Length: 149
Image (tube, rainbow, N blue to C red; front, side):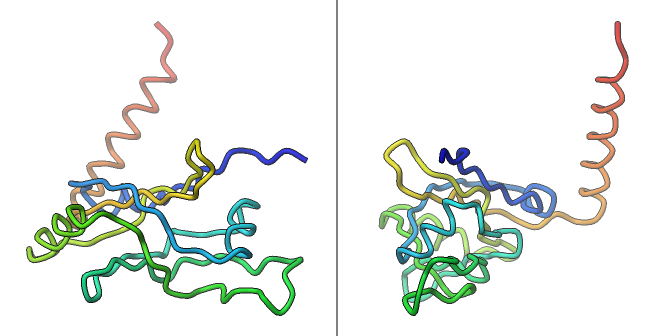
């Protein structure tokens, strides 16, 4: 059985936020969590990241229970630690001192070495008029693609 490549995107992130900084982080996971993620049983749309005591955590990321897991199964929604270098954490910490800045997941994927990685973004939230402008640009792009020259 071959699995299709794992690329799970947070579609809300680019709609809700301006992405200023991007980082790639590792995640501390249990065995059944890894197996569920590889079967694409994960949702990062409602997830968010928080700095606590100098460490970065992802909260509200839903990883479904692994069907073949026995009593060793994991909790579907729990806090999971993200692995970043000290320099990256300092950049995020300094950026979080500004008002209205959030840390949010962008993409969950498996890198070429087989490790599960999470792309996170740091940025400010968009106002409603910014969102309308994005929708307008998408509509224009869609209409132009329909027209054949």
